[in-house]
Amino acid sequence: MSPFSCTSGDAAATGHSGCLCHRPEIHALTRRIGADLSRRGFVAGVAGSVASLGLPKRAAAQPGSERAGPSHPILFTNFRLFDGNSGTLRDGLRLLVEGNRIKAVTAGNPAAPDGAQTIDCGGRVLMPGLIDAHWHSIFAGLPLQALLNADFGYVYLAASAEAERTLMRGFTTVRDLGGPAFALKQAVDESLVPGPRIYPSGAMITATSGHGDMRPLYDVPSVGSRLSRMEQTGASIIVDSPDLVRLRVREQLLQQASQIKLVGSGGVSSPRSPLEAATLTEPELRAGVEAANDWDTYATVHAYTPHTIQRAIAAGATCIEHGHLMDDATARLMAEKGIWLSIQPFLGTDDAIPLTGPSQARLLQVISGADKAYTLAKAHGIKTAFGSDLLFSGTLTARQGTMLTHLTRWYPNAEILRMATATNGELLSLCGPRNPYPGKLGVVEQGALADLLLIDGNPLENIRLIEDPAKNFVIIMKDGKIHKNTLNS
Image (tube, rainbow, N blue to C red; front, top):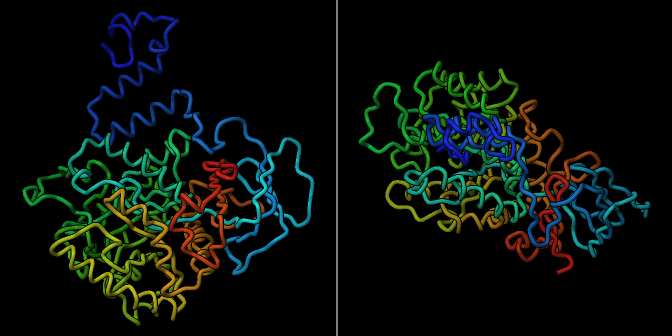
């Protein structure tokens, strides 16, 4: 019996007109699913096949949302505006959304267009949706052992649930820095599941023994071209030559990666990869950077120490992920070269899952280095992005907004909000023609993409409002669609 047919394969071949299962597209889908695919191929194949059928998309609206139904202009009135750039709020404005864009931000009292829905914001603060520049859509909400051992269909279902929670925390866009997020991105973009915009990197490109090489010791030494489970699922991929780096980078670009993540040093969560270890060589890093540049996008490099950061810069990296153990000379070099720093404000062990042994020691290294790294970044004027990098816990991901408020140790509230909106939006734009969402993000201005938050309170005065989005975020709009509206509750 074919999985999508009410008859045997032979009977189905004769054709029927009254049942969907006899459409030739359904039989094509059945053949694809019946093929000998890896778990990763199965999930991606199902997503691609269902999309090709043109079957109905998710249509049921959630309570308090207005995502269902025809698109109509939405006019916001009676709000105070944080536009993503200014350090003060602006009053006396009206904002019109048409489709997925901000059509106009005007002063005075212009008439609403025909058919527009008018939303009186009651004097609350309207601002751009938040952007997390270092997120792992697939890895964030599940324990590591589940990711290593569970059926990957379950992993994707759990990730889709976490995607909705991410959006409900007010993060309307994430920059995914490693993992098989392509199918999830497609499902979100097609409104099959609610979630943030995803800028995917695809698999982390790492070296044997580097961060992301999660093989159990019984899988060492490697045998020929056999791939580990993490590689088969697209979480990370191991390379040990410039030519292999080019191959694996191009495979991520083939799958529509918006930027490339290269792993230049050890990491916290990998059990046998110390932070100070230099993993990819400079020629290997350069090969990855050049392959990304050939597609008019950029490579960002995971690196913590002065040596590994400087090696990445010499290889042409556009951005450094982490950088918590940098020194003054490295910070000066980053500023001189215009290199971005995507760093995370880890202040204590509450910001990570419980760790033991070498991983715990490395986390403490990162925590102890955070203050110096942020201080150097400010002193040298390094272009700095906010990311949370929360991993392996659905409880921990609820602290995404709390991670943003940690920045009060170094920055005033307005600068924090600017970093999580306009500044992160500028970083996203570096992927050029690989940008999956052409348009401006992180700002409220005419022509920008309509990702908006309405906040009950003033985050410029009390940044901790962001820590409780369920209570304080009254409206969440992404791509011109309202996903949450509790104004009339």
